Length: 113
Ligand code: SF4
Image (cartoon, rainbow, N blue to C red; front, side, top):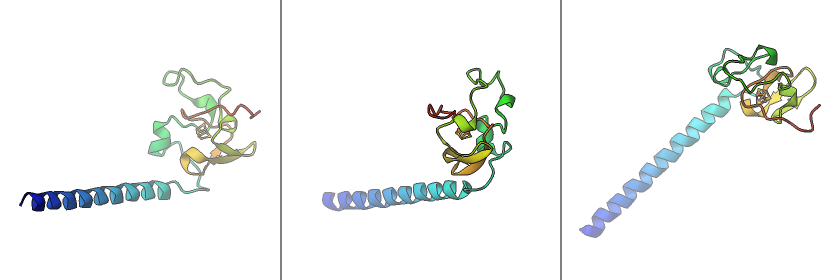
């Protein structure tokens, strides 16, 4: 009887683990679908908004982001891939951001101009 209870416990644990993994994969899929490459990132969208994203770095709230400087903008970020006007941001799933944009995830690309 003790072995039977143990087997039932193990089977239930495996089922619960599978269900949890399926939920996590599903959430990840939704996130990927939400981040449509080629789409323009908007200041109004909730996630970019929570990251302080601005289409122009000069409009960043200095009170909220005191470490922001005018030297920080998308085309100088490691996650930006584009030209002098606009490019894709890998942090936002390849959405298009302006070269002059900014968000709090800015990481200086030391080889950028
Ligand atoms: S992660 Fe970098 S490239 Fe993307 S929006 Fe933020 S500052 Fe711009």
